[in-house]
Length: 185
Image (tube, rainbow, N blue to C red):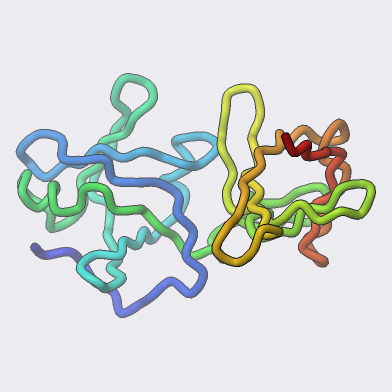
């Protein structure tokens, strides 16, 4: 398989999408965008994939919207279904410096929230954010507590509702303050 390679490795890789699978016989692939607006995935360039134990840059040749919510793309030098299938289930990654700088204290990227410590308004540490679930109603923080030891942990789901539940986000201290209690049964 011949993929355009630039001698570059992302220093702070951020996943912005995923190659879902081959589309047709001419090397097109279906992609899933993780950006807030699905079309914003095309704002970022270049895309990287971790393919066969190496970072590779993949270059878009064409893209188009299918059924109002999914995109298909054609990469340079991917010319048939077999090549497209080899790329299936790989994450689409960009360098984090491509994201616009945020100047407002109340603005942040989800990538900046992941890893933050979650503290209650009473000063109790609930754990650290390990991921964020996107739902139609609101986003959910997945918080992992390690209070049961290094090998056992408990995950807690906390809705990301500003002012009501999320009281403060301090990215300098890596702390999110929440009005939330965990009840043990």
